[in-house]
Amino acid sequence: MKAQYKWLPWLFLTPALIIALVFTIGPFLNTIVLSFTNSTTLGGGTFNGIQNYLDLANSPQFWISTRNTLLYVAVVVPLLMVLPLLLAVLVERNIPLIGFFRSVFYSPVVASMVVVGLIWSWLLSSDGAVNGLLEALHIIQKPLPFLTDTTLLLLSCMLVTVWKGLGYYMVIYLAALGNVPKELHEAAQVDGAGSGRRLWSITLPGVRPTMLLVGLLGSIAAMKVFAEIFVISSGTAGPGGQARSLVYTIREVGLGLSGEIGYASAMSLALFILTIGFSILYLRSQRTDQLR
Image 1 (cartoon, rainbow, N blue to C red):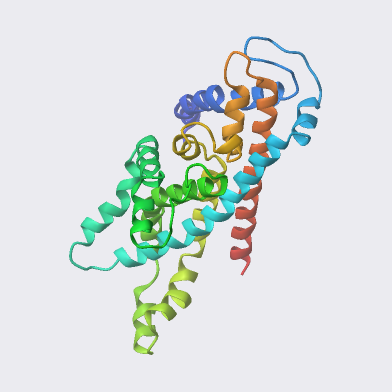
Image 2: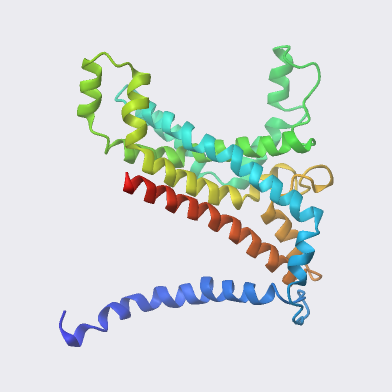
């Protein structure tokens, strides 16, 4: 590149850098500063050291929210790593109407989370279709409290998250399956390997990096869960708010004219550190794969 054009890359980068500085880096640095103050929504606040973090450590509400968030990750992420892969293997085949089924599987991705949450809250209510079906099949004698029991409410929200994410991660897996050599499947088939054996010995090793990526994306999404719990529980987060996630609690603490901005900022940083932990695990897994 000629000397007189060396400034050209910076010219193209400038708008993106300004947007990142104003909407990402700046607010992040401001959150760090606020986490060491007792700022409120209407007050400037003063420096109070690590008091917010000490309050977090002694807050049952914070630990309940952290437990629910980690439980969410532990249940949702393995399902989002496996089920979309099986779905992708199924719809990869050239069979009649496969384009229609691909569209059906992907349709929840483009649906609004609020609409999806409302539909599932109707389905899971005490007089909803799910309880009605279970009673008609004589599996249960009385309606299950999907929306009023803390454990069942969390499981219902996890079900919605998995159902809505299937199509999105299926598309990622479809792209990865295209890179698995078909010659390997043909050779294994000639040797008598069945579908299950080929899935285990050829497909899974071929899409392993993508599975790790899906695990990372699913973990980050699960750590930020809010809409599912808010909509399905009608804004109550279950009995006594026991089904709160970390993001839900941050919103509650920092919202309103009396919002504790400093305390909510400290909680946001705790969530950030947890999320970064999953990213580090992903990078280490990638490095291990490359060293093999």
